[in-house]
Image 1 (tube, helix red, strand yellow):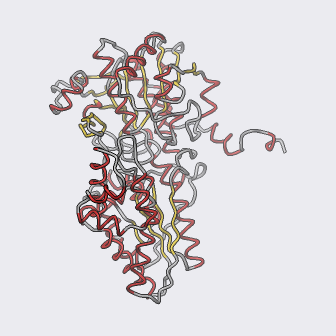
Image 2 (cartoon, one colour):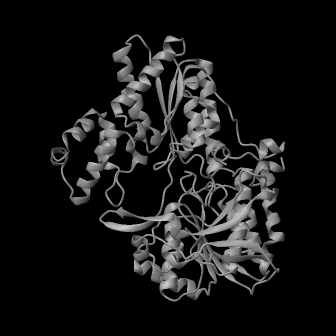
Image 3 (tube, one colour):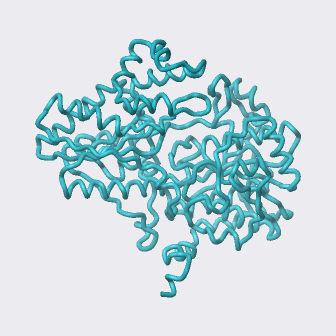
Length: 537
């Protein structure tokens, strides 16, 4: 009865007591120093024009030297963009890292992320405030927002806030868009002769903030394991009743990493990968006919049930729907038109595609738009689209088949989950090495941890200039520097394995049931890694 009176579950209490192995980095962080590369920095002409100061930042390596302290520092931190499990541990790692250099250093958390940074909303963080969030999901320690820092007025206001608080550094915990903010602020500060360092860490459940320097993003492992448990439950239900065909849409507008990871974790009958569909140049009709024939083959072998995974951004990778979306984006960028006039301006191919869509999907494509007028694929029910069109194809080919589709979208259910031990350790390590970059006055870098597939004690901290992860792309009518979004590569070992298993998974019930994330018990059970990371290491 005593436990029932507490405002924390017994499980939450146990997670608050867990201390990640990567806290061991605190023992040596004071003796870590930076060596600038002697190779002159280089970047594209377009980036040079937009980020002239950042493009002069050198590569760095970390070496062990004499242990040195720092004067008391005042550092700002914000959680930016969508939630990702492990974000709280970055703040805690940063706090502990700063105190390792000087116990009198202070940490200020900006409330509601970039919005708080713009409006000057913050709170002074101490142990009593932050340790209550140790190893917990969500971003409720500080909250978050998705504001893009683009205008001179915003940047000027932020610089004034930073100077008013007499901050010695700023850390932004975020994904592609958030760390574009990091780069733009670092550039603005340098342009205005402000030596305050601004750095970022890679956080996103989509897993698409990934490149030569970043092995995987914080929160991706936890998110995919939560989805995988849910998918496993659906597959077990399907095996039990032997009746339904589950169409499951997963997060990932730009890249299919979540679907790839969950496909490896669960081995459903069909796993669609957007990038692979794009290479094959399949039309919507071709894709739906292929799925229909696959499900009919199962039906004829006595298996009138299945589970299929669908990436959120699939509709932008199918050849004819991609063309339709591209044409609509261009038309709506120029002017607002009534539906009839809009359809008149479409090419014959795009118009044919539009008229082939179920009415509710066509309506979503016309109305789901961002501030630049581009179609928001996250608002399009691709799972419903495929279920409807596949059903039509099945009834054409084999009218006797009783086809019962069930559509699901697994989205925000995972982003505030309790972080896996892997993400807990990853967050702490990122925070500690962020402290190192800020203490050593390094600006314009993304903090990274490498050797993530290895035991925690073999992890290596590092970082790379943000401009190396950027390119210039069109936003509306403006060319803007942005962090590149990574995509699943066609020759990725993880993808090749998934494709190789495709026939086996389709025809047989080779389902894999990961179960819920485990936090206590055997090391092999509680310290797992993303399967995509293991395949690519």
